[in-house]
Amino acid sequence: KKYEAAKRGKEYDEKGDTPEEVQIKKQKQEKEISAVKTESRPSFNAADTGYESPEVSETSLKKKKQKLIIYSAAGAVVVLVVIYFAFIRSSTDIIVSEKPYDEVKQSSQERYVDEAPKAVVPDSTATAVMPADSLTLEIDALDTSWVKILLDNSKVEEFTLFPHSKKEIKAKKNYIIVVGNSAVTHFALNNKPLEFSGKKKEVKYISVDSTGLKYLTTPPNFGN
Image 1 (cartoon, rainbow, N blue to C red):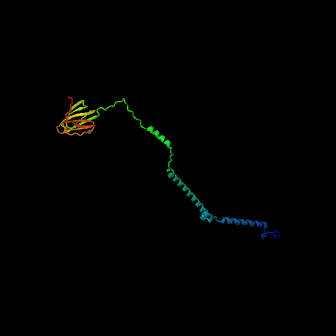
Image 2 (cartoon, rainbow, N blue to C red):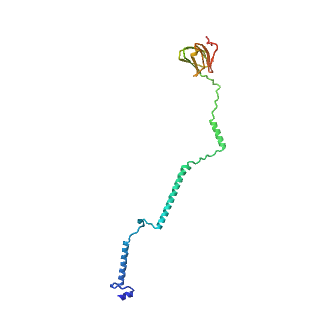
């Protein structure tokens, strides 16, 4: 067996195994030893321990910086867009196109012609109509007073006013008046007081028209 083993260039096992059997046993033992070492070796995970190699740490830091730059740029773009729509775009100047001078002049003339008031042509056939009874005379007496009036030189009225009484008379042009106890009597024409003064139990002669009140020096003629 030794000779055969030496002839073949194999080691001789004194237990009587052939070189092929020895080789097979040896390979089997190596496999068993390798399997035992693999089962007994603890698995190592860098994520479980929190440890990172320098290469991994540097790569992660670069990625974080890149993300930060991207987010910052996106935020700046959003801010610029908001500022543009909120301030710049709303305050844009309104551009007014300038019209030619001839066009503006013609437009102004047309507008003036349209808006110009039409002249009123008087009708020669129309006659002036004077309002009836345009004068209103109000007589106020503080005490008993006697009054006689000629209206428009045509109509005569005579009456007595008692204390704190009033009378209103209408005419077209004028009044000729004789008033007794003139100190207690007051006159107003169209709601405007007239300046009149008299004396107690004294008779006064006056005329009243649109120009105001006038004193008469002689008694009026009432046509009777």
